[in-house]
Length: 134
Image (cartoon, rainbow, N blue to C red; front, side, top):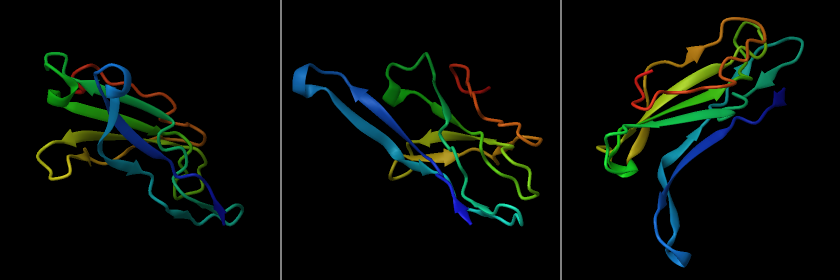
């Protein structure tokens, strides 16, 4: 079994200041790829490689600050293997920042969007419009 990097995404907010008063704070928890085994008789793979290869963060442009904005995040994982031996079909995940949760968590919206064919590498590039609806 070959173990590949599963990937991790972290989102940070830049707090304005000068000199040593400039700070970065993490928004929510880490978003980690999930380990899964692919039963491939030729080359067994394990993992969800490349989560975070591409990311796009949207924020409502009408919000007074990033901390007040509705935040959505799309994350590409173009090297994901599927369960029927198709290499690099890829996936895209969409998350929303939930301020109502105790830890201000990133919550996945719906199921991942899957690539369709052998070596599609779906998720190599992702982009959301400013309000995050598309």
